[in-house]
Length: 167
View 1 (cartoon, rainbow, N blue to C red):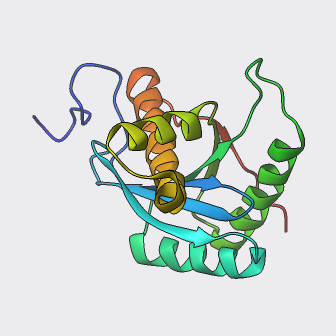
View 2: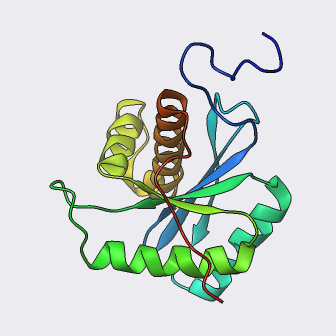
View 3: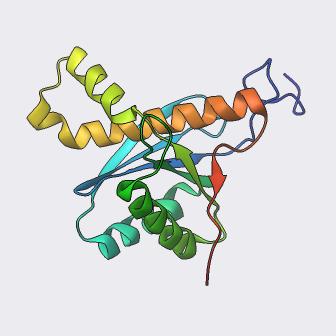
């Protein structure tokens, strides 16, 4: 594969560089990362979510540590695609995060069903629900990132929608 060939082969391609994905919940925030070629998404950690300023500080540290080309944040939508109070909350969270980590871009991507999918996958692998709660958030972040990477691979465009930094 020459340097001009996109990673992943056939489709329009994917930008090179590590990404972080975030699954924002009320109690916990799951974080995942991928390799610079955008092939494999892996869990990073679960950040406590109730203290939002502390969560933002930890996420900023992770951005400094991982040096991603972008951060993708899961946007919870209803099954019909609408946005409710949870989506409004995540948009606000993403806006503040974008301000704190600029110039690293933040993108919102549809996260419908990721927590359900993560829960089912963990249950199938024998993880108990009590023990699995913090792992579920990381697994959901992995699924969000995998979907974002796949979307970019197919379309050749950055996934989701950009979060504009308001100063």
